[in-house]
Length: 406
Ligand SMILES: Cc1ncc(COP(=O)(O)O)c(C=O)c1O
Image (tube, rainbow, N blue to C red; front, side, top):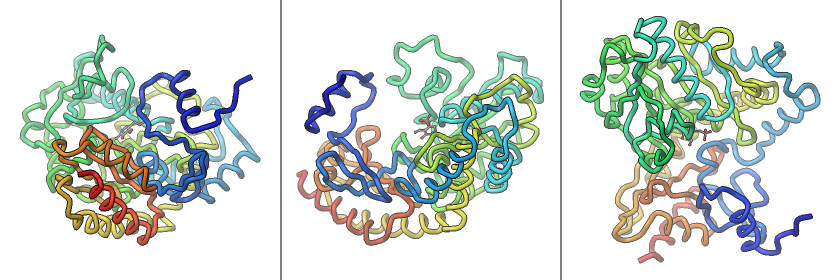
């Protein structure tokens, strides 16, 4: 028998004792969520301004997502891809039409979608571009975050993600984020793909120069290199369009989705591609026991329908502009920069005056939940269903918090 914790400190102590210490959560223990709100075990209410790094874009326990799950649980759970199901084709058709891509391979976590992209790119390089197997190279952006598997950390520019985990996977070339000349210089006859986020989320909400995505695609086309975009954090209406790439191009050659595709309830991810790219993945070359199962498919279908029917991209663009205006108007020496697109906003804190973590701790005290990234940036990514007056309260709370950290 385990003893029930009696206080916040007890809950935290139990997690410390029994969990791998790979996260540094804020000192709060949550036990309830609804819409844009979260509650802790002491009954205190908070406005969620992180939405699980964009995974909870529709709000906590969104009723439509919940209904979709419950309906599905009355019929069929997980039969695996050994059989066809009535939901998978429906999900696949909808997500392909929604993204403008030809074909999809459903997975679970974001990292798995990226792994799928890496495998497809390499095999396309081998089978179509005729690069000798083992020589394929993929160009990636410095400061990237694509997940935590051994292959993915192998192309991270962050030494902390890699230390002690060697031997790392070879075949990746890092270039500065947003640098077109560096992209063209890095391409060799062995390059099969350029894989990048359109905005670096974990990297600190870094936004590349305008026109970069379109020009990067042009360069890739010129050299017969696949242009692959990771929209696991920026996709699904987060940045004011259904997908961030839509600001500049019609579609990439490969696309990775995750987070909000799971409706905030369940891990659902996907790798989507051009037909000829996906065609290199044949029977037994890839797979996933849970990927595309009926529950995941039901959730993915409902998530896409909510975005389309509730026009969440327009909402994110409009409310994002409002929030940017409100945050940019805060007069505090602690703020170095405020940047963002849609409802993905980063506030860079002057490290000489405070850490981003200090700001998050102060916001927590005041009932606003967000999280620092890279030590200096506070990430604001509220659920897309948030109301303007709630954003105004958040902006006032940020201003008050900053004024108290002098
Ligand atoms: C851009 C991007 N790609 C991939 C991932 C990895 O997703 P997951 O944690 O679901 O594996 C993340 C997670 O933060 C991300 O932001």
